[in-house]
Image (cartoon, rainbow, N blue to C red; front, side, top):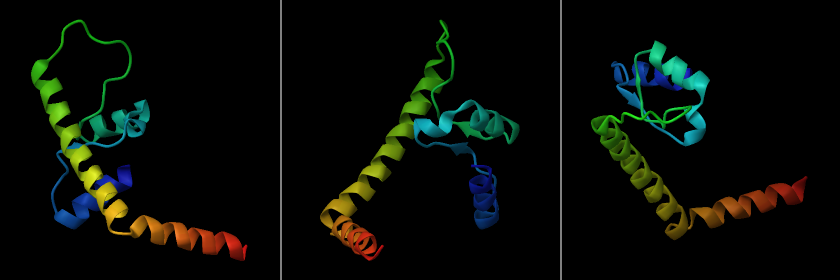
Length: 99
């Protein structure tokens, strides 16, 4: 993940403001890395839930997850209706038949 953030900085010439992804990326190591790099994480907090909730933070996180889900859905739609999944499946079958 650190390399992804560095690549973003090199490509766009600016520091990444936030990072969002699957919950798999929200582990302790990655959240610590993001806090060290001062990048805002859009992951569920680890550990027990806090009795005092910050509604603004929760709304922001939901908004970012909604954006991510919309993009992931567009990829899935393209794969399903663009025939890409079939091409991937055929190439995988061809590869497994040769081995």
